[in-house]
Amino acid sequence: MTPGGGPAVDGTAVDGAADRPARGAAHGTTDRAARRTGARRVPFLLAAGLCLLAGLDAALVLLDLPAPVTGDRLPSVHGVLLVLGFAGTLVALERAVALGGRWPCVAPGLLGAGGLLLLTPVDPVVPRLLLVAGCAALVALYVRFWRRQPSAALVAQGAGAVCALGGALLWLGGLDVPRLLPWLVAFLVLTIAGERLELARVAALAPAAEPAFLACVAAVAAGVAATLMWPAPGTLLLGAALLALVAWLLLHDVARRLLRSSGLPRFTAGCLLAGYGWLALAGTLWLVTGPVTDGTRYDAVVHAVFLGFVMSMIMAHAPVILPAVLRRPLPHHPAMSVAAWLLHLSLVLRVFLGDLRDTETAWRLGGALNIAAVLLFAVTAATASVRATRSGNRTGLEDHARREDDRDERDGRDGRDGRDRTSGAAPVPDSARGPAPAPAPAPEADSAPASAPDTGPVPASPPGRAPVPGSPPAPTPASAPDPDPETDPAPAPAPTPGTAPTPTPGTAPTPDTDRPRTSR
Image 1: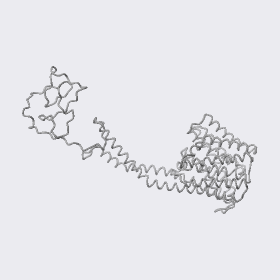
Image 2: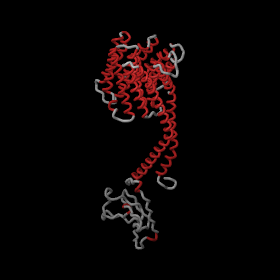
Image 3: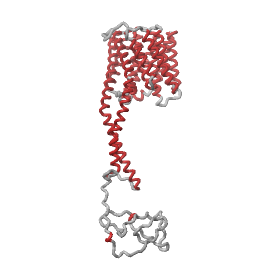
Image 4: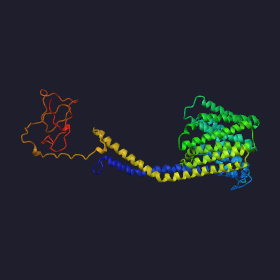
């Protein structure tokens, strides 16, 4: 009860309102802790972003277009910078966050540092060693995952990490980038394929699905290894294996079913399916033309894989993975779809008209639009994340307070219903609760009937029943049977001695338990 005598539910509501600031403060503390955790991962993402910008700058140099920064080293490190410095850092960061702890962050740190050092005038061996160490740390992450729970998806992702390590070692040994291309392709293709298998498990896969997937992974790994010793047969095997892997993904991936949805699922499905198409084109070119290390066919294979497939996959997964890594929201924005369309249409212009038809203008224009599409997506994602974070800061506490108000009201209603059930009455809705009836005034003692007989001393009550002062004498066994506890109502509370049992006219009706008992 409250001090004013009101129902206890009012006190409950007051107590809940008093506790709300504490609960809101706890909510804010948890949110700030999550953001601090995400802020500690920003340097890794910043390193990957700088590698991306440097790689795009090197692309402008290779396209013979004006570039913000020019240098002799940029064109030679363009491919490794984007594959290991940018994409490798993102993959390692996502794996480190999933594994948890501090030591897994060594992998993205080494890869990011190695990519940035490629832009400096230090001895080229130093960044190459860092890239080798980063790839080795990534392999160690997958070993740790394997000890937790082995799976076919981890086999594919671990094989991709081994290919990255092999490519970094070969580059450290002096092998040129065109000969490393199959290793770098296998790294990202197998990593992404393993992630898609994890998501495909949500649906019911056929018993033969995973063995077929593992066969495709083994064929890709065998083709990559064969390209070192037997370039022509190895490239043919790699092309056929990529086509088989694309067929598996198209058959079992959930992207085909999500294409008819809207918003983010539709955007993700479109990017996935378009990426599978570009990977199939690269496999077909390798299967038909064999090994290529320069010229237009080489340019077509490289950008079909790393722009058409890999960058499209990054666009598809960014709204899901980046919030988990940075603890910042990244809602889908229509400009993301514009960037994806621009990427694929400009890639059609570059590959089909520029490379395969040997049109230099289309090749250069398509390359410039490729860079614009990547930058547009990066700027859109950053802007959408910042706006969503600021909006969440403004409305987060208001939403939390609204939820607390709803909870307090619900708790109060449950408390009233609980008291109704305790009293034995049916719960009464709040809308039906009227003002309580005024109690009937008790008549004065001298208002009792003057003709009331003197009954004398009150006899003892039957066994099990308390004596009732002022009540008429209980019947003897000869005149009335004992009361039946199953049919007879409970005894009424004792009225004041000398008062009339009948209520005053005009007052609320007396419950059944207050009526005088009659003998049967």
